[in-house]
Length: 282
Length: 176
Ligand SMILES: Cc1cc2nc3c(=O)[nH]c(=O)nc-3n(C[C@H](O)[C@H](O)[C@H](O)COP(=O)(O)OP(=O)(O)OC[C@H]3O[C@@H](n4cnc5c(N)ncnc54)[C@H](O)[C@@H]3O)c2cc1C
Ligand code: FES
Ligand code: FES
Image 1 (spheres, rainbow over the protein chains, first blue to last red):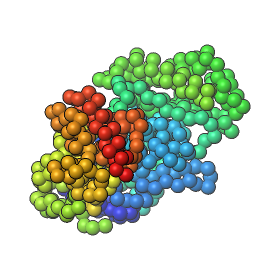
Image 2 (image 1 turned 120 degrees about the vertical axis):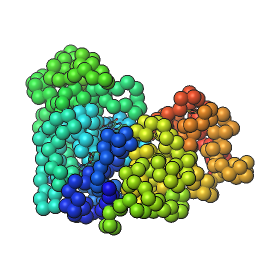
Image 3 (image 1 turned 180 degrees about the vertical axis):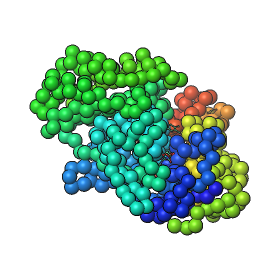
Image 4 (image 1 turned 135 degrees about the horizontal axis):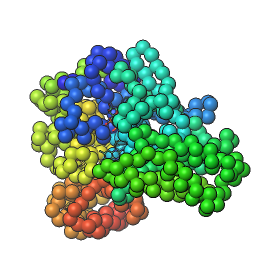
């Protein structure tokens, strides 16, 4: 087994060409658990933690934001990133513990692609673009095409996820999650709501209630017919409740060791209702 | 980029020293390497899945779970373990008693406030509390709770630990 520690994306791609079977490791918070418990015995590793290019973010001229795949959650929780993408900050703050948030990254969340990954509902609500790069090509994939199933994504083995681009919306956005306690908890059900006033769009994405993250397109359309989001986000309680009911109908939860399908469906409905109520009173 | 590391040798920078790691499988966690190869048993291993925080160390200024760091990927990083805190904080406002007994002010406060029962969680908490107070000398109760939310203690019920943090805050304030 070998470990390569590249300092740039180019060096990382060269390393991947030299050892095509290599596994990438960023913060290690998913990968090391597998290695510690002997579920994974990699031959070769490429550690991305010293690739500074992946640890930066930039505001683009077209009112979008590109976040490197190696930016740790702790950087999204506060400061300018929190101002720019509040829902991402809220989601980041729910991840694990301070120790996990100091190490864990969006690149790793995308690499693992668990339906319970807390970064993913935000990326789905924002219609994020995932940037993938191989030694001789780069491509952009919509997050909707990137995540294809439970812990399955459209990344090719020779590609590195370099970052994601999200639009900077004009409207309220937030993230909510249900788990068995406050800290250090994998989501039982989660939801991200994002409003964009200029385009009159309401987006709601659900985590941990289906094989992929789910966008509730019917509930979104229904809500935008009830209220004119561009004018006001004041929503009456009956509409918020009905929105929650409709969102729950679009979830596809299962029973597993963390919870039951019935509870999950109920929980996402409540989360959606709470989020739209928060948006309404903001 | 340097040549990829094989199983022969790599060097980690820990508590201000270069520490060679020889004949080790490169997939080992930093926790394992600290305890089993470098004679630094301060960081404890309980869960090895990032849940308990007993293995917390500082890496390039962040508090992280050493069980989730692949040791070989930490080449070039500045690592501080609980054993190194006293050297890392030479100008810290430690009490005279703490200096003579070679413990930091946080460790001294844990002793005085009775924050240690079985002690398994203690090294990780000491590192986490140093990390918190170095960045935020006067944290709110919620900030203290959040900052140690990744450190599980099954004995104390946390009350004595909060008391120790508060004691350090007061001592540091008085001495600054
Ligand atoms: C105690 C604990 C609590 C946790 N709590 C939460 C939680 O609350 N919410 C949550 O969402 N997650 C949680 N996690 C899971 C984990 O922290 C996240 O999924 C995190 O985002 C993983 O990021 P990482 O950088 O550490 O990934 P790594 O472990 O480094 O990598 C994960 C996977 O992604 C691949 N990968 C990493 N970077 C890239 C890249 N640039 N290009 C291509 N592939 C890549 C790796 O090959 C690997 O397959 C928790 C984990 C632990 C141990
Ligand atoms: S042993 Fe590392 S967090 Fe428990
Ligand atoms: S003192 Fe026993 S776990 Fe904290």
